[in-house]
Image 1 (cartoon, rainbow, N blue to C red):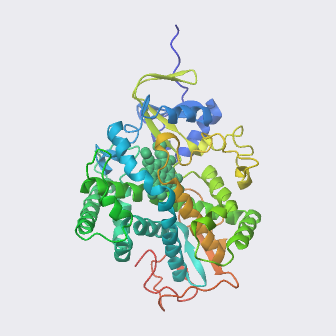
Image 2: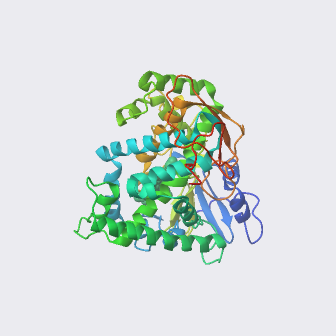
Image 3: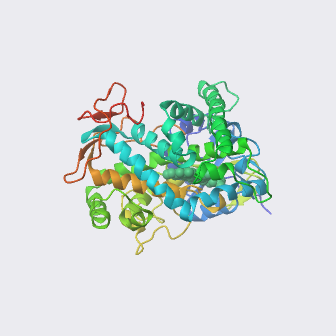
Length: 477
Ligand code: HEM
């Protein structure tokens, strides 16, 4: 039998480096070019190694169904081992991964979820108190800390949250920057060295917190208390290092992604005022000016749901998902040798016109029950699919809906930078700064109580027209 060909290579591969520089600079246009030249299966060269790109629902189904079988996730994300541990989560043996996953998953289901809503509301109301009546702010530097505060409050408790300073945020950002997908991890790059230093510090701070929770449990138990008291199905107590790693995993996996997605969702809405008006009418009808949202309220806000989904389609912050071929395999009539990197690319798959008609247009109604363009579970994959589908997807959706609903309930916004672009480079695709919005309190909406009288706006992403929020800037204090 004749051997199958390797997937075709995208044009523009340079000697030695291949497409590596293009990929490092801006991977999405490279992947779009591959789709135009070769359709749904093709390869790029990263240095001397090929990486195969799979697009579209059928190939996505293969990608997710074969993960942990023909496709290895642990070899797909080699940086994970440096950030966490070789026996941690999907780096562990599959059976061990399932045990660790079983500890996490119940925390993102049912009754547990309803408890997070009040934390999300409280943190957003705090931010609005600091914003005051009118002003402008840069999206990522303002919403990033909000997301971090919500995660810290939800997962580490209100006591830790109240002590949370900018330092934790900075350490965490340094830690996250060590997730380097392309360059070799042995390179003494400043960001990799900083990341390891921040990791040590975070382990120390979180270790102290966990030990204090073991000595003095909080009652009623919150997320952290139940986590430190958790046992595996085989009776083993979750040890300190595993507890720290699980917390860091949640904050890492949920921070940049959610901050980016919320920011894009707001940008998309502001760029489509007709649809925005239907969202506002929907929330006016269902919740009026009530701030004390509960799960039942959030569930009713279907127009916001469709908006957040349409943003997931158009701006998937996790724009690429990575695996490595564990054996020689065959896909789409091509052979893929063992050891080849294999990528799914939501950023390109989500714009295939036979899957999403008129793919470059913002049409949230495509996710209404009548149209339901995501009925094929492998068409919309901004949160992945299969067993490794995002553990925090429900948390993230809830958070994005709560934050956006409250912000839109209180303020009219306009974009000061009207054509935002994603950050360049092979990193989480959030909007590049500056990406500022102007805000003005809507008429008839009750004011929050400003918590102080003055605010030093020296380095602050929030420029207050009024002197609200002194000493409480979400980023600098
Ligand atoms: C908009 C926000 C988010 C996006 C776009 C997102 C996206 C993703 C994607 C695409 C994956 C699968 C990766 C793969 O298959 O290679 C994933 C996995 C994961 N996410 Fe999220 N995520 C978000 C928020 C969160 C939040 C808030 C949390 C936790 C609180 C979280 C926790 C996780 C975990 C633990 C995994 C690993 C799942 C596993 O391997 O079993 N994510 N996420």
